[in-house]
Length: 166
Ligand SMILES: CC(C)(COP(=O)(O)OP(=O)(O)OC[C@H]1O[C@@H](n2cnc3c(N)ncnc32)[C@H](O)[C@@H]1OP(=O)(O)O)[C@@H](O)C(=O)NCCC(=O)NCCS
Image (cartoon, rainbow, N blue to C red; front, side):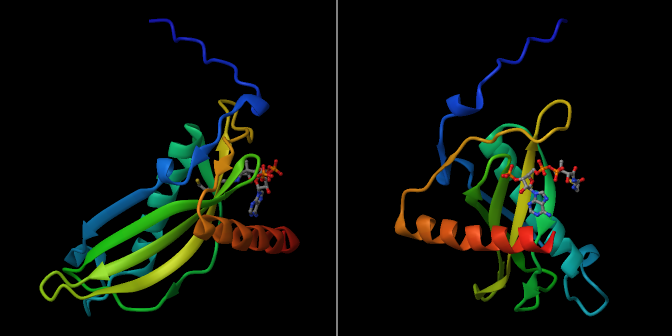
């Protein structure tokens, strides 16, 4: 069957979208195969899940293919163990032209005691790509609340820092 032609949308015609429209929450129970012999979940797996959730946010916002271009350092504040429910909360903080910054928060909950702790936080940057793998404009981000505006300001500073480090 012939593929339908993609509508061509000029950059200045892109409608803004809110933070809520692309927010993602992902949860998974940690299994023995996710951990080292002492029962601590691998940091690499947590980073993978953070990237997976962040990528879903970027694709949801842009409805484009997206690639990860940067991931800030991740501090693991609390250990995560086999049996914990790991919840990744991801939302947009900033949208440039083609790039989108996502904040990711990782919470670990002991399902038997109900005790939940913040295991880590990070910021990841994604770039929306067109069908020729070139950066393409993403819809502007509509920031509504004081908290969203504060996150935007903090993201602008991180963006300036990343540009200096390039
Ligand atoms: C993403 C990629 C296409 C960007 O290419 P590029 O030549 O740097 O493109 P540009 O200079 O036009 O930059 C595009 C956007 O990326 C941002 N960017 C580029 N390098 C960046 C970095 N190191 N950190 C943060 N943002 C960056 C730019 O600021 C720009 O944002 P804007 O459009 O909002 O202003 C290219 O770097 C790439 O393909 N990287 C590999 C991605 C990948 O394979 N990831 C892992 C698997 S998903």
